[in-house]
Every structure is written in structure tokens, then in C-alpha cells.
Amino acid sequence: MMPNEIFEESKKYIMNTYKRLPLFIVKGRGNRVYDAEGKEYLDFVSGLAVNNLGHCNPRVTVAFQKQAQRLVHTSNLFYTEPQVRLAKLLVENTFPDKVFFCNSGAEANEAAIKLVRKYSKEKGNGRYEIITAFNSFHGRTLATLTATAQEKFHKGFDPLVPGFSYVPYNDIEAVEKGVTDKTAAIMVEPIQGEGGVNIPDKDYLRRLREICDSHGILLVLDEVQTGIGRTGRLFAYQYSGIEPDIMTLAKGLGGGLPIGAMLAKDYVAEAFTPGSHASTFGGTPLVCSAAIEVLKIITEDENILENCRRIGSYLLNELNDLRLKYSHLIKDVRGKGLLTGMELNINGEGIVLECLKRGVIINCTMERVLRFLPPLDVSQVDIDALVDTLGDVFDGMKV
Ligand SMILES: *Cc1c(COP(=O)(O)O)cnc(C)c1O
Image (cartoon, rainbow, N blue to C red):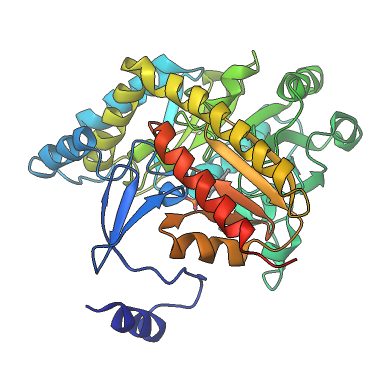
């Protein structure tokens, strides 16, 4: 199909839920994608923090190609090896005892919300409420939408799910005030991604942990975006010195294949028994074989996380130089690892389009925050190309 045909037929046949960029992608390799005419683009979106090891990573591709020829799907009425191996890898590399598999970030958070409620019911403590943070993003199902404390996402969908309350992010006092005898859990992202790459104070998670411990409530970390190496550690909570009771994953976990996971300590996980929760597709051999390879690559090759941290600070430095040079346009830059944001004084949509014209794909969230999410093994040369392109676009802007 030709690009124009694609654009028109997409409009005709696909529900109008996405504002897409005018780019028809036919192929991807590493941190590059190609359109129908063979034009190459540098990809600083990575499928929204999904392709952390690049497009069509050869090891991941071979892993699921092999699995595709053996067994793709069985349902969870039966045992399969990739699912057990993946759960074991997750447990061995991080804090939890048990894993539940699903297919997306929203589903992982939905599972976490259900587990919090079931756990509290079993304990008979009358708690059910979950505190989340303003500008959070937890998904688009009704419960995760309610957990997402951003009015613009709620509009038109009320009545929402009962049992949620909201506090400002990175505000410990507000959390202390917000906890009641109905509070069952606090659920936050270690760094808010969709909310504008908001990085909390160093001791934020540790202090949330203390509040949870002193009130006997659960700490749920949504690492759907920050997980799988994005911030320079396998999981962002590992910077904090504390452990959550529940953690959710998706995005980068399957190397591009759809998988979500909800991980928990045994004392919480025990609240789920057969029938409590389920997913027909959750943890198919196919997606699990990809996720196993993703985790093996990141955990066995230290260079990847090392590169993410080193190139991440290089990028931050370069962006800071841009901020000094274009201080009328740029309000702030912030990032950890390769989860990086540049807050503008203006709407960023035009800049995204200008970069696209120059063969560089970036994202804009919260209208004014340019977000850069290259694969974790991105090179310094490609970072320089991004920074040069941004400078070029800023130069061309009338103010
Ligand atoms: C993207 C995202 C989600 C939702 O994931 P989906 O796979 O789109 O359902 C949830 N939480 C966070 C932190 C995210 O970034």
C-alpha cells in the first residue's frame, strides 16, 4: 500500500482513538525505522519504551521464531515451560515471590488493584482505598483509568470506579494526610513517564515505604515504563533501597511482543486462589520466550545498563546545553537513564513534526514535554544527531 492509501483507509476502518504522526513504517532495525520509500528515521520513541533492545533484536527474534514453530498458545488450563522459566527469572532478579502474567500495562495494574482489594478483604481490615498521584498514568481500563489521576483522561467516562483518592506526586506530607483507616495501598510510578518525566526526590520511595509500614498498607509500584532497564537499573525501585509489595511490568518486557506481569510478595500473592483472576492469553509460550531472552540479554550483559546510564547522562548534559542556548523555549530538562524529558515553554507538537521531517522520531507528552526513549544500547553518535536536529529545529523557530 502507498502512504496516502494507508492514511485514508486507516481513517475509514480504524476507530478514531489515536492522533498519529504522518509516518507509515514498514521496517525497523535497532534504533532505526524505514518508511515505504526507504527513508530512514532515528527512533527516539522505541514503540513507547517497548523496544528497549531495538527493533527486531536478533536474539529476541530468533527466540520467539523458534518458539513459534513449537507451541504458540495453550491457555492457562495447562503447564508450559517458557512461562515458568520467565517467572523464575523475574523472581530471581528482583524482590517478589510470585508472578501473574497478562498482556499489557493496564491489565497488570488491574490485577494489582484486584490483588490489593482481595488481600485487604482476606485480612478483614475494612480497607479498600488506593491512593495514587496526580499526573500518574496507570492505563485505560476503567479501574486503571480511575487510578490515573488526570482529569483529561476521566472526561466522559464517569461514573468511575469507587475506592481511589489522589495526592500530589513527590509530596510526602500529602500522603501522610491522605492515609485513612480505609487506605489499603499507595500506588505510584518510581518516575512519572506519561505525566511528563517527573522525577521525585531521592528518598520519596523510601518514605512511602515507611508510611506503608507504619499503617500496615501495601506499596504498589507501577514500573510499566521505568522497568526493564529504562532508567539504568533493571527496575527503577532498585535505586531506592526499598522493595514494594507489588510491582507491575509490561512495555519493555516482551521486546515488542505484548506481555504484562504483576509481581508480589507471597504474603500478598496468597490472597489470589484459583478463580480469583485469569487471562486467556496471559503468559503464552510465545511471548514468554521473547521476554526470557530480553531479561537474559539485559542481565547477562552488564554493558547495556552501563551504556544506558552513561549515554543517559551524556544526553542530559547535551540537553542542558540546549536549554542554556534556547532558554526562551526550554523550561527544564530531566531524566534518569534513558527516560528523558525536555519541558518547553510552548506546545511541543510542532517540534515533533519538524524533527520527523528531519528523520528523527521523538514524542511529546503533557503537551509541553518532549520525551526521548531510545533503546538502551543507543550510541553517542545517534544522540549527537538528535541534539543537532533539535538545535536546528529551535534555530528555525520564530519567537
Ligand atoms: C504505558 C503505561 C501503562 C499502560 O500500559 P498499556 O500496555 O498501554 O496498557 C501503565 N502504567 C504506566 C506507568 C505506563 O507508562
